[in-house]
Structures are given as structure tokens and as C-alpha cells.
Amino acid sequence: MEARVKWLENLTFTGTSGSGHGVVMDGNRDTGFGPSPMEMLLLGLAGCSSIDVVHILQKGREKIIDVQADVKAERAETDPKVFTKIHLHFKAKGENLNEAKLARAVELSAEKYCSASIMLSKAAEISHSWEIME
Image (cartoon, rainbow, N blue to C red; front, side, top):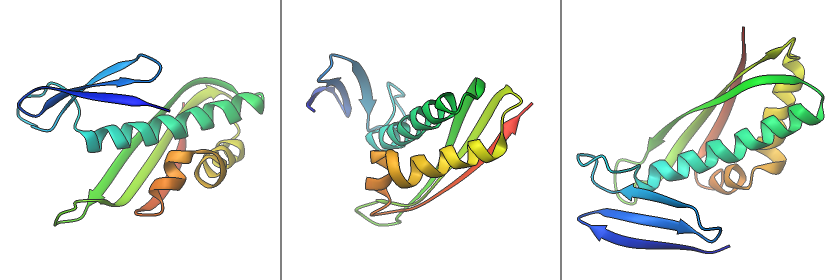
């Protein structure tokens, strides 16, 4: 994999993935041009886990209508301000979703498939929860 990050101005950068997709990142919360790099890590984690959960549920023939992952994280007080705790909460909606299958999909993502989760768990305590939305 490859990526490129280019400085625009102040603390604003563009990032381009090896597949050609772009994103704006901003290290200054006041300008609001894009998420910070640390927020991008959380988005990547939630995206990686969500892809797994949806894929596993689909393979289990669950009729999914919607899946959402909310992420909350705590960071160290001093530099480097690494993540110390991360919690992902999945909300799934579908036709007669099986709660045990949802729980298993989240568990498999966390423990076996999501590279981002497994990598970040080396530095931060990662927890998961889920619910079925009506």
C-alpha cells in the first residue's frame, strides 16, 4: 500500500491513497477543513470493523438494512497523546436480525479480521458493544 500527504497551508493537508482517493486533513480544529489525522485513525478503525460486520452478516444470510458504528476514544494527557481507550458501538437494522449472529460478527471482526483493530489494540484498550435497531 502507498499514500501521499501534501501540505496545503497552515496545518491543512491533502492525502491521496494509492488507489487515487483523496481526503483533506486539518491539524487545526478551528479551521474545520477536515478531520484531524487522529480522527482519521478512528474513522479507519470504524470503517474496517464495519466492513467486516456487514460482510459476516451477509455471509450468514442476515437481511441487513443499516449498520452504523459509533466510536469514542480517550487519549493520553501528555505527548505523545496516543489513544488509551477506544470503544466501538455497532447499531444494526434489518429484517429479524439474529442478535447472536451480530455479536459473533463484532467478535470476529475484533479478534480475527480487522487489521486496524488488531493493530491499535497493541497500544489501546479496545472494547465493543452492539444493539439491534427496530
